[in-house]
Length: 393
Image 1: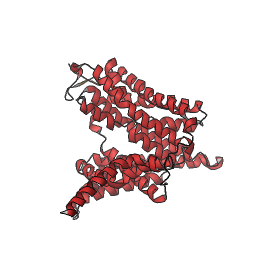
Image 2 (image 1 turned 90 degrees about the vertical axis):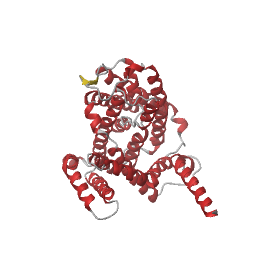
Image 3 (image 1 turned 135 degrees about the vertical axis):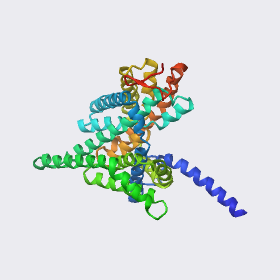
């Protein structure tokens, strides 16, 4: 019986350790205590964590919802990407960043992570409203646009150091390879992945469908790396491809334990280990300005997109608030840029801090927006769509 008690205690302690693992990197890393430093093994686990996290992100992308609310979602997403790129990119340029670095930082803050917003919407029973559906649909489009912009930035900035005589031919070749990659992605989504998953189901071994999906994920990540993109980009589109098959729910249920047991926590820990507060006192103005712009750019950009689609001011405020949170999407984009050499060490910690602050602010604004929304403004998702906006009449 003593063993059972000891086992119970170990399970409690390991669960608590896992809960704290996402946050403890900053504490034990060079930023504070300096006990642990980033090494090749932690970095390798971190890279696998990014790939799995992006694969899960692709799996969770509800493209049916995007198609149902296509017009408002697309317009909200596009304007919600343009505003951060221009406003934050312009601010970074004013802080003496190079034009390409400034645009890349704008791209980092063009991403949206609605996981926190979804929890708030669920708590207030507002997920099944036209505003909630538009937030979710816009987040899908936002992620896809962000991944494409990230791909372009990696290509352009990755070839910036090539000698003038070779740059045009190399850049042209890279773009041709990447166009071929996206053509392959379409074929994967439409035909190849469903066929491979059916073959995987017939294999006489345990978890064959999950293993097949992992092969697809790692294979597309490898191809993406080979054509000059990030492996995370390939993993994201692999997740979208698998999400189009009948095995989506099974894969999602199996992949989350695989990722979140070790690899994903290592990704978040590695972010903390990369951070340094050595010059934070000199960056307070920069952090403050970017945090303000990170919130305002999404609030006004996505809110404007909602107004264009016929939503009233309260609904537009709610949609804009629901798109502010950057969360893991912002962290992933920043980490990819940092590991690809697109982002200098000196400002990496500042950007992570801005992402965290904007993510903390987002739920408070969303709750305030929900309270302003009249109860009778909620609409059943089964109602028809008129002029691109769900009708509640």
